[in-house]
Length: 302
Image (cartoon, rainbow, N blue to C red; front, side, top):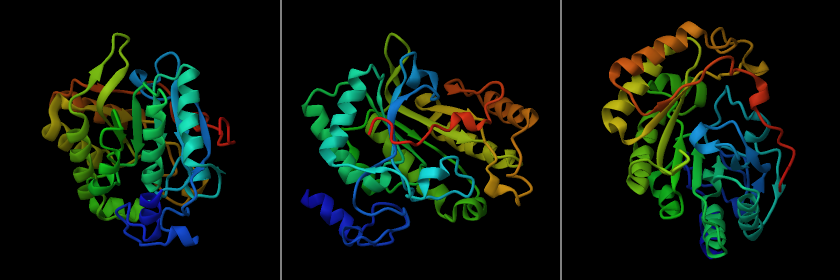
């Protein structure tokens, strides 16, 4: 636990480098202290088909976030105001219980500000029989140095790549450095896991899937994201193009983010990706911009 305490005492786990003494109760940019919090741990059916499968993904939601997008779909927990306090050993037990329930994988959602605790819990669970793949589900706003806590523990990286435009990332996430930071983090993720591998059921065992959420009115920047990802990694990674942006009440004053993505906007992005030559990808069909895709953060499974 000494390594955990050291990391929490002057926290620089995320690119914000705020230096908060989380051991002393200070809350950094991530809005949480040193005590491990979990808001939900349950089977989840709304991931990509190769992650959820028929049985579901064993998804663990961690309150707090080092990015803090204005349009956050998980606003209920990203501010760090929800969740139950648990120990590292309890988290390890949760992983094992999800495996017993038939989860296809363990899916860690926004765990970056708890990297030392998460790594310790995974190490403990693996010694006790955790065998299913572990997925690291992230905003993409990660430090390469911090990701090395997870080397050998994560099988599948599932990061977002939100923006290529620094001004856009500054406007919506107060992170002008997001594009360069996400590029560096993704390079480290690919280094750790290599090319994607799937089992006989079509479920991913290893590799990287990059998610990109199309924002209304910003097709041009989305095209730049797809172009970068494809030109840099080709078919070594999978790209998941998402149209599920859901306007939240807090975005009512923004002329673009107060509406959903149109079918025409999403079609333009998909056509662009296909014309580039993208083969390894996932698309969304139909009406996905519904709040029903946001789970209840009621402490289930914790």
